[in-house]
Length: 383
Image 1 (cartoon, rainbow, N blue to C red):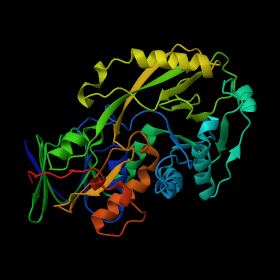
Image 2 (image 1 turned 90 degrees about the vertical axis):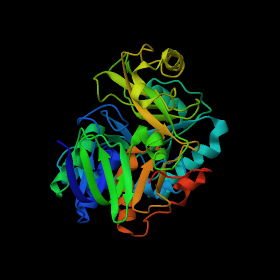
Image 3 (image 1 turned 60 degrees about the horizontal axis):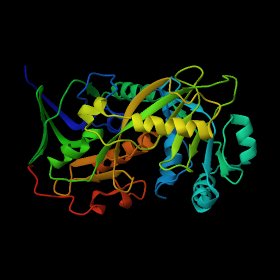
Image 4 (image 1 turned 90 degrees about the horizontal axis):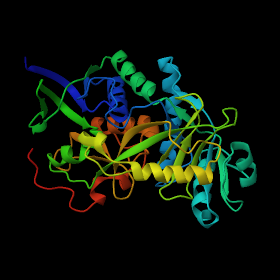
C-alpha cells in the first residue's frame, strides 16, 4: 500500500550526517522524518564499522579547524546524553618526512590553535616504543586530544536521540525523486510520498547521480577503501593511532579495538567503483602495496592481512566536502563528498544543515565548501 506522509522537514539518508541533521532539526522543534533506503543497521555506505579517528589535528582546509574542535566536544556531549560509550580517548601520532616540514608544522599549529599542546616526538623513541620503522630524520608529533569514535554506536545513538526528540525514522524507504512544489517538496519512492516544507539530502556514495537528477552536477567519484587488520607479532607491544604522510596516499592506523591482537590499517585512497557494485572491485594490487608497507615500516605486525573489510569514500576533486543549497530551490539543502574525513565532524555538519533549513546564519565560514567552486555544477533541473 502506498503511503502519504507529511512533515516539516524530510532528511534523505540515515548515515552519520543525515542522522545528525535530523537530530538537530527535531531538537529545534521541527517535525522531521529521516528516510533510509537500506534496512538498519547496514554496512553498504560510509558510516558503518567499529572505529573512526577523531582529532583536533587538521591537515585540510583551515576553515575546518574550529569544526574539528567543536565536533569533538559535541561527540562527548552526545555520549553523555546517550549513556553509551561513543568516544575512547587515545593520542594520535602524526608522522612526516623532513621534506614535509611545512605540512607537519601547519598541522601541529591547528592543534595549538584549539588549545592543546602538540607534543613533538623523537623518531628513535617512537620506533622503539611501537616497533615501527621510520627514518631518524622524520618529523613527528602527538595530538593528545585525539581518540577513537565507535562508529556504529555513534550512528545508533544519533538515531535513538532523534527518536527521543520526537523524530520519525523509516528504513527500507528508497527515494527515487525529489520534486519541488509551490509550498514545499515531495519526496517520492516505491513505498509512497512524503510531503514537507524542506528536504535535507545526505545521499552518501549515491550523491552524484542523485543530485544530477535535480540539476546539480558535482564531480564526485566513489572509492572502495580496503581496511585491513594485521596480526601483532607480540600482542603486548604498545599500539597507537597514527597518520603517516611519508607515503602517497597517506596511511592511517588504529590500534587494536575491533579484533584482539590486530591493528587496523588502510591507505587513504582506493579504486573507483560503482557503489552498487562495490564487492566486485579487485584490490590485489592494493593488498600487495600494504604488505610492502608493513614489511618496511611496521615490522611489529604480520604483513599478511588477517581480515579485510571495506567502506566507501565519496571524493571531490579537491578532497573537501560540499555543503550547500539548491540554487533554484533554497528549501533543498545537501551535504556530500566528505572524501573519507567526514565522520568526525558530523555533529557540526548536522548543526549547519539544520541552520540552513531554519534560515539562520552559519556558525562557521563555509564559503569554501559551496558547490559553485566546481564549474558548471548547475544544469537545467527536472524540478
